[in-house]
Image 1 (cartoon, rainbow, N blue to C red):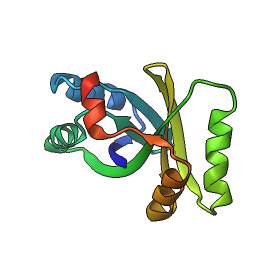
Image 2 (image 1 turned 30 degrees about the vertical axis):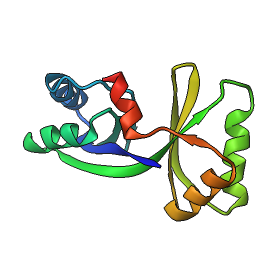
Image 3 (image 1 turned 60 degrees about the vertical axis):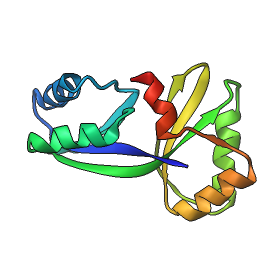
Length: 142
């Protein structure tokens, strides 16, 4: 029900992101979604790719600090208000969304979420019959 996201710690300096992107490119991996958050000195580049373990190994072999993180990839209908309704399920269940970003894939909205309680999140997903992408499904986009 979860997928793996790559979290790469990078210095907040010219060329750092370019270096990471070139490593991923050299491994012939597609980036499906990504986001960067930063502070003055460093950033965290979060990436969804069809082959997260392969990307993680390639980045680590080049000396980068990389983690694999379990996240949820919830597929939503492309209609107004669907994201708000979906997030309300977690709020009402007392689940904090630690971070979230979204993208559009195959005419569907995809929410990537990390939550405060993985087991409880799975219960909410099952209760409301939410559709989650799997890593196997992501392989078709590489």
